[in-house]
Image: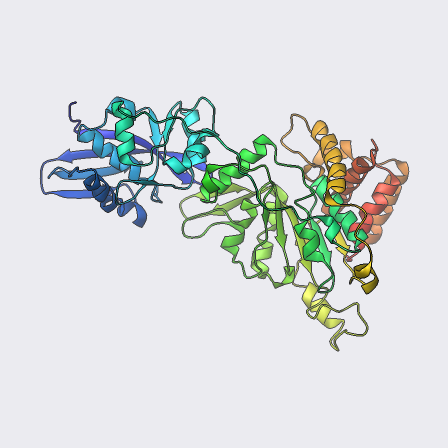
Length: 507
C-alpha cells in the first residue's frame, strides 16, 4: 500500500444541533520534527496530539520523524471537543499507509481516543449521523455510540469499533464488525400515580387540562399542599413521544452528552432545575454553548418549583422560548439555536412565609409581604401561563380519607383521547397541541358559540385581558371542548377557561 503525502478525513463541528463540515487534513513533510494542529482548535483539540501519539504507540506504531501538520478546515470555525481524536488518528494512519484512503473517504467520523487506543463515547453522534445521511456517507464512531448512530437511518452504514485495532482489522478484512442495532431504553422507574394525591380535585382537573392541551400551568398554594406531587405526576398523564418527537429529543440529548448507551426513549422529558440555576444552565449557552434545561425538556415538562426564588433575569429569559418554541444563544461569532417546545409547570407560595391565606398563621407584614413576593414574577411571564390554579392546604379529613377514585391510567386515557382529536386536527402541520395553535388557525378551531363569545368579550374587558391572554383563553377552551367531546367551543368551556385566568388576578 502506497504512502499518501496528504490525507483527508471528514468530520464535523457543532453549532447547536446543526453540524458543520470539517475537513481534517494531515501532511507529513521534511524539516524539524514536530506535531502541530492548526485551524482554530480549542484546548481539548490541541491536546489530541498527545492522545493520538500514545494510542498509536499502544498499537506498536511510532510516528515518522517528520514534520506533521494537522489542519482543521475551515480555519475560521472554532473546533471544540475531543471527538476530533479519531479523524486525526485515522488520517495519520492513511498517510502511514496502514489504512486505505478510498475506504476512509466513505465515512464521516468522530470519537475520543484513550491512551491505549480504545475509543471513548462522545456527544453529538446522532446529529452527526443525520449529517452523514444528508451527505450520502457512512459514519464511524466509538462502539458505545453505534446504536445511537443507527437510529438516523436503517440504510446508513455504521462502523463502531471499540478500538483503533478493531478498525484496522475491519478495514483489512480480518475481523469484520457487525452493524450496531438501534435500541429503545427501558425506564426502570415506576411512574408516579395521581392516586397518591389526597384531595386537590380542582388542581387535578387543571393538571388534566394541561396534559390534554400542552398548556403551561402555575400552582399557587401554601407549603405542603401538594404542588410538587402534582407536577411530578404530570409525565404519567402525557402520551409517549411519537417516533419523530423521540428523535428530536434524542438529538438534543446527544449534543448534550446525555443519551445513555445510545438508546432512545419514548418517555417525555421531565426537568426540574433548582432555583439557584444560572441563566446559561436554564436557557443554554456558556463558554462552550450547550443546551440548557429548557431545551433538554423539549417535548416534555419543565418544572420550576419555588418560582419567585429564581433570579429575575433567569425567569425573564424564558419569555421568548415559551412563545417561539426555540432558544437562540447569541455569541460574538455565531448564533446557536436549540429547540425548546416545552410545557412549563411552575409552583410558588402565595408569600414568603407561605401562609397568607391562613388567618391563624399569617405574618404581621401581610399583605405587603405577598405583594413584594409575587412581584418577583413579571406580568409578561405570567401572561404566557395558560392555567393559574390555587392549591389549598390539605385538610386532615382528606388525608385520613380513602384513596382518590381515579388513578393516572384513567386520566391518561381521557388525555390520550383529546390528544388524538388534536393529532387529527393538525395533520400535516408542524404543531401537535392546542397550546401551539395561533393566528387564523386558532380562530378557526376555537371559535365559540354566540353565548360563549359574548361571555369572552365581556370578561376580556372586565379582566383587562391582553391579546395574548385572550388567545390563551381560547386555547384552553378548545382543549376543554376536546375533553368533553364537543366539536364547538361552548359558553361552559369559556367560563372554565376564564376561571383559570382570573383565579390569581392575572390578566
